[in-house]
Length: 287
Image (cartoon, rainbow, N blue to C red; front, side, top):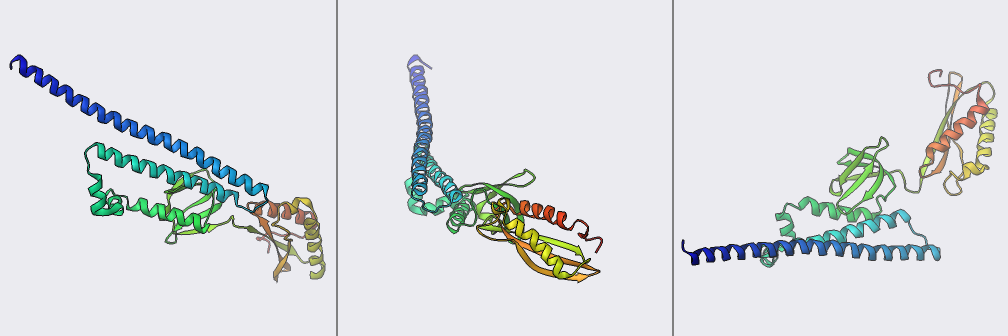
C-alpha cells in the first residue's frame, strides 16, 4: 500500500468516526432536550394545578383533593410518555429508519403493536377510564381483582398512566398494570359501616337491656370524640336484635363511620359497652 492509499484510508476512517460521533451526540442531545422539556412541562402543570386548587379553596368550591392529586400525576405521566415517544422517533430518523413510511403504511396503532406495545395501550386506556369513572384515588383503601381472582389489597400509593402502586397492610408494595384491573372494591367511598355485636346474658328484661344499650349509644352520639369519627351527622343506633338463645341476646349496634375510622369507633364502643355490661357480656364460646 503506497502513501496515497494510506492517507485515503485514514481520512475515510476519520470521516466514519466523525459521522458516528455526530449521530451519537445528536441522540444524546435529543434525550437531554426531552428531559428538559419534561421538567418544564412538569413545572407548568404544577403551577396550573396548584392555582386551580387554591382557587377552589378560596371560593369554597367543592373538590376532591385525592382526585386532584391523581389527575396531577396522570397528566404528568401523559406528558412524559408523549415527549419521550416523539424523541424515540427522532432517534430512529437519525439512525436512518424511515419513520414517515412506517407511520403512513401501518398507522401509529400498528407501529405500537409492531413494537409489542399492545399491553401498554391497554394499560393506558384502562388508566384513563379508572380516573374518569372515579373508581379509586390516591390514598383509597381498595381490593383489586382480575376476572374474580384477587390480585392485591391495600392503600393506593400512586395511579399512573400505565400502572397502579398499592401498599398492603403488611407493607408489601404491588405494581399492577392498569389493563389487568377488572374489578375494584373501594372501602374509601363516602363512609364505612361500623358494626358491634353485643352478646348479653339475660339477667333482666329485654326492655331494660335495650334501655341500657341506648344509654351508652346516646352518650356516644353526644360526645365530641364520636362526632369527629362519625360520617357527617350520622348517629349510632340499634340495628336489630339477632336472637335470644341459651339465655343470651345478641344486639347489633351500627353507624356510619368516616373513611378509615371504622375500627376506632368499634373499639371505643366495645370499651363503653364493657363498662356498662361488664358482668353480662359473654363470649361466643359461652353462648
